[in-house]
Length: 206
Image (cartoon, rainbow, N blue to C red):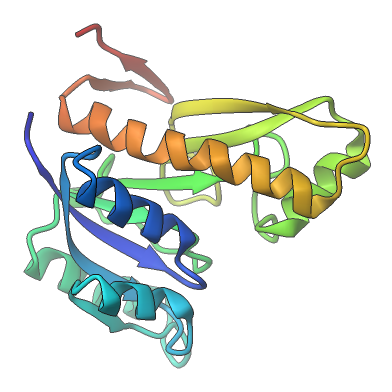
């Protein structure tokens, strides 16, 4: 199986980044993180990258148009020859250029198309799920396109909602599902088993 070269984009604490780092170190994920980029300079995710000895930098959204931000980001991603871009708690909208179609994946803490889109991130997602009274929620790994939380879905994992859940307790269980789903999607892509047909993804048998 090919070892994918990953560029991991973060905006906050980097817990999803840490999950990928740990799995690579443990030999449970056949990939190499060649670049970590944060859209914010003060976040703990950069400390995680530094502690792991990973190349890391900040490309701030502030002061740039959306197009300038995307151009700066992909200039660095292309320079390190990344095969796949992982949006790991990345909160900025990032345009997808033609050469990165189906090469950018995102993890979202709900079952898309529920509780997704602009403004739905972190605890906001789980609060909305509880307010709606759903019995099942979960997480989604999908290819990013030029709409929020919209591209073809690769993997979804479900999480039951308990009667006594808060946004925090529900969010923790959804994050545990994310820790399984994101590496699984990367492995499927590395193995060449992911086929996109229109807006649908088909997983090829081994």
